[in-house]
Image 1 (cartoon, helix red, strand yellow):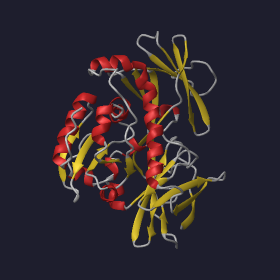
Image 2 (image 1 turned 135 degrees about the vertical axis):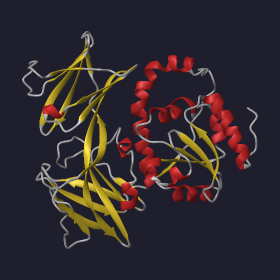
Image 3 (image 1 turned 30 degrees about the vertical axis):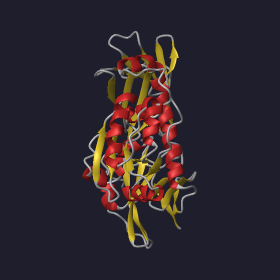
Image 4 (image 1 turned 180 degrees about the horizontal axis):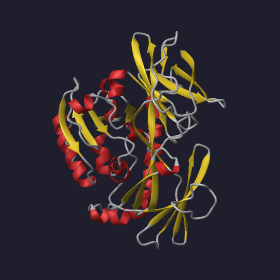
Length: 379
């Protein structure tokens, strides 16, 4: 196990300094975190008080109230930036919704982030789009591993609840939509890659202790449990309009349901192929990510259908995040959700693209079963 202590400054510098090479296997950029992309994290749920919605935003030790009054026309957001409880000049901002979405730059309030608001059937939700910064790289045997620190709260300093990513540099550079990994997260949640996990513990003095070690639990179990937490986060909103959704998509609520098949979770296609060989079934990969609501509609409305369950049982069902596996693009995976039937060599045999209700999804699975040489199911 490689164990190092990273001494990170508590704020971002005005201009990047050159990387400092340390006499250890990890090269650190000290006090010079370079912004490379954005990450997103949900704010606490809005409390409803009559026509007013309230939540809180914590940033750099400050706690700020956010308030939206449904009666405002046009709607406005009040951000109590100074915490005095009064609506001072500049603290009330107009909300311009494009459909169900509105975005606000919080830079004028000293918050290095954007606020994204979503007005849906489940009410108002807010996501803080923060920034993450390059941290360095280290050597693990014959591999070079790149590390990024994800500044989830946008305070410019590592803190509990921030995240760290570790991948080979070439794969890290291709991480186009890594913010989709963080729609729902837990403090000190590890990052998994290969046969290792990256953990970062922030001390009270701001030092960060990073360990690169054997996972504390099998990676597939960790990823499956994490997926369930994210799916439940989405399902809370889905349940509000279940009846309307079923009418819109022609879903008969009295159709027989059962216990969904268990999906194997991994981050690499090679591991998925090995799993399929182990169980002796054709490989069916669901490509999905945290931020995709339609990906979560499948287990919520489709995978529980008895006809779908019967058909899925013939496959080695594996779930992979496409942004973390370069092979996804080579297989033509552009959007999510996307299900691909793959041969033993990883060659693409067939695809189910996008969300489908139970009946058309079961018919698509019949086509895939035929391609895979599995027997037809009459029911």
